[in-house]
Image 1 (tube, rainbow, N blue to C red):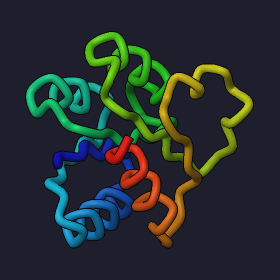
Image 2: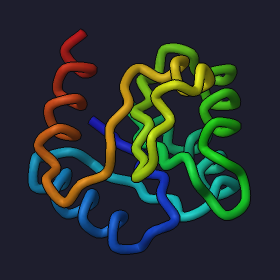
Image 3: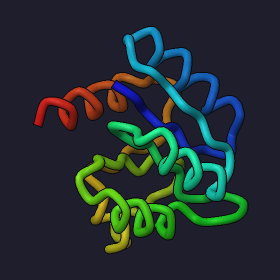
Length: 115
């Protein structure tokens, strides 16, 4: 099971990568939107965690592009800010608020994989 982590925060990248690899997932990391699109096409991940605030391409634009390319790939929006009322994020399968406690993220991934 391959997961693409898209986040410009290197600490979040490391935390998610280590924790998810410990769970047995193969993890690919992108620090920019452009890098994420290249890896999304090349790696064909089974699931994506996507930060909304990115330095080059925002996560909502990435979400749209990824859903156009692979509509069945589950995408989890992951952000430190509240975007739940933004209709654009509703195209994602899940929305979580970033935390150092990754239980919500891990549980969400398991639910999406088992659908």
